[in-house]
Image 1 (cartoon, rainbow, N blue to C red):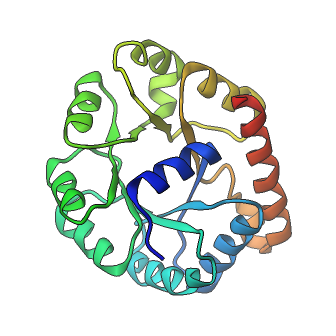
Image 2 (cartoon, rainbow, N blue to C red; image 1 turned 90 degrees about the horizontal axis):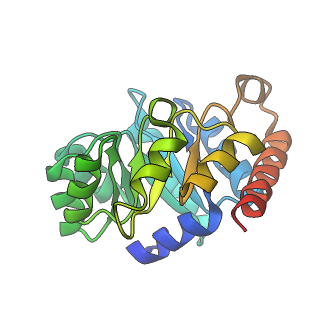
Length: 220
């Protein structure tokens, strides 16, 4: 299944929450993805942080054919060649912790959504000029909701995805959404050590369902 950039942007905004997950075991990664999907997730970021992340991602892509409405992207990509490698493998979108022009050029050439990481007004505006429709604000724990509320009026049309420092609690989510965030990324706070060690996928599905419902309530 292929998706347009607009379909993915709409999916991210509709959900309000994008899971960020990495694992070196293809079977466990697949079960996490399936549990998240069962909980309502339709946009999922697998992060490129392990030596075999490319092989695990290829496995997830092959399994995701069973879920035609699942948008599966790769995160923690930091250069053009790696961007192209994952696009060629079938990644629906590319997320980076940094803002690098060569990545924008590769994504533009392949008509793929590029979500760069930015931490200053200059980076944000530069990324938008390079075609980024959603900006990843990173690290959120350092910048904080006050940064978001301050930058939103200055940059018309800005759509921010907050990662780093977001907690799956009403207080944390509310602070980011009230500040103007379009969505948040949740990693280890969602995929807890206990859930992964116990392989408690029903609990993961329950947590995902609850967090999506909470995000929906807070945003509307």
